[in-house]
Image (cartoon, rainbow, N blue to C red):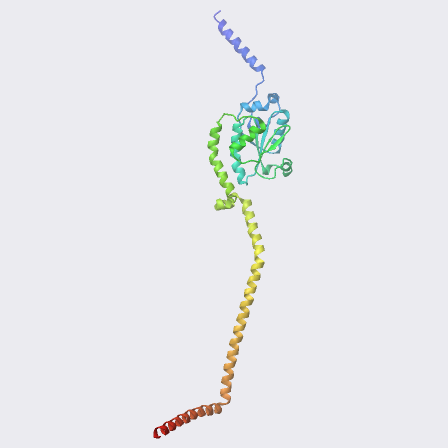
Length: 303
């Protein structure tokens, strides 16, 4: 009889173990499985309900992840999936991704899938009407809505509420905290929009972060030179011809003066006597003129 309490406790322990073994135990899902689901009895439940248990945020995916997300909304007629198509080289995508993460916290019942441009085919992007980055879509089994408003948290929350009818959750952070933390991001976004050229904002990071912009800038400069070089070349040729014409005239005039001087010297060498006689005649004329003036002055004095 002294062993009866211990035996009773042992029997209860064995019974509890058998009871627990009779129920299916679902393991904690991974991040990708939580948003996209996986086959199995544990995942026959509503994926949105599973998503409510595990706060997973934004999942990065590819084409297969996109197909699994579409299968979720096909199974759950009232469920929505948020898709963000972004590009790593796009500066506006870098601004939009933190806001997308905040939206996943505010609306945990909506799976958020971010797809990078390099991991998906262009035909899939065209199918969803993605012709620029970033592109935000909310879709379910019947509709697909694209966001076209400003990239502010208040506008994004209003868009979610208007399309899905869901109110923003107060967990794990409140909307006021989200708005306060997003003020700096919105201010930076306004600066980005006012100055759309990233090389004007940070020229030292041009070749490090914006390779496509650097190539585009080089192409524009080369195109500009290609358009301006013919005109500049024509102006240079006209100026060169004008300068050469002036130089030829100046050289021709110098040659004429030199030839005239040589001719005068040659004439002086050929007729030295005439030149001497002319000089003597000029001297005699000056002497005769002086004598005539002297005689006239004497005649006037004697009278």
